[in-house]
Image (cartoon, rainbow, N blue to C red; front, side, top):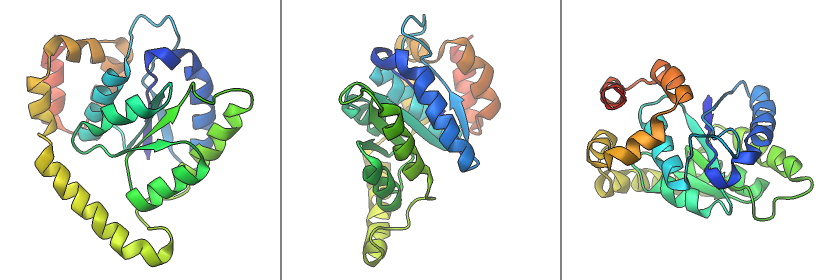
Length: 212
């Protein structure tokens, strides 16, 4: 599984710490982590949590990655931003049980963490536990086992509902504010890495033309 890490501006200073912990855990599950930034507090390419939502949706809808790890001060804003896009199901993770049950029950493809609220001494240990529980399952198995069947059915219903309540990603990219889109993706790492991993030719071609 390929995992993208995205940090928004208020918590960019923690990118190195978060990436280190996530990468350590990911290796135990044969997962690859791709760090899309922000990389530091003074990074010239600034990502708000809304931009993190758009960037996550681009990565997931074009299948450049399989999963996104993101967050903000509380984790709430990033979670809401990601869930505003099609084919993105983001959970708000506050502890290890959240991480495990979100994957087992909801089978999501993104997780948002609070990187300021309650984040202090020893928080890297909490992150390691949460990342471990998040990646310890392939997702969608149900929890507890006696609830597995209705939970899988509910997930299918939710996926169908989202196809009605959301436009497709390419349409969104064409209709969204062009300046906002360019501000989100116009930085070296995205341009050097994304197009190699993108598996949706139409989205990839559209973004290449936008960045010309």
